[in-house]
Amino acid sequence: MSEEQKRWEYKVEEIFEDIPDDPKNVIMNIPKEIREAVGLKEGDPIRVLWGDKGTITIEKITQQEYDSKTKE
Image 1 (tube, rainbow, N blue to C red):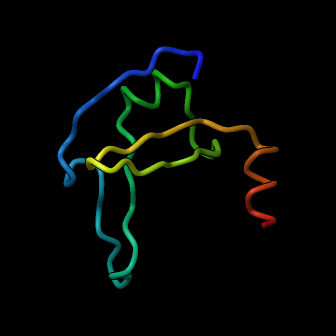
Image 2: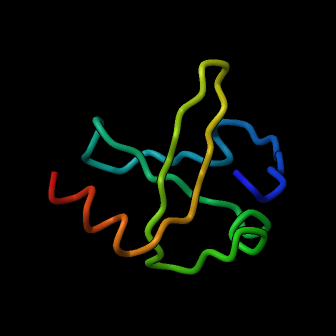
Image 3: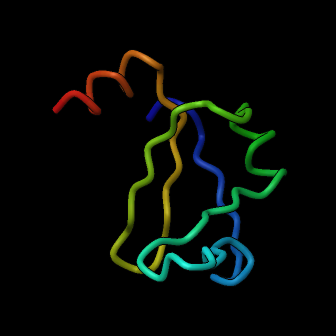
């Protein structure tokens, strides 16, 4: 990654929210400071990577990358 990585720390309950009547899924709320830092707006495609120490990496991807992954 050519850009400097930034780190933020949050508690699980600050990011994830249960979905009523859907116990198998959750809503992931990306905090405003993160959205602004990476230039995310509603509807932008992202990639979410789960680290081995409880970390989450969020990457903004292009629509083309998203479209190619959803066709697999």
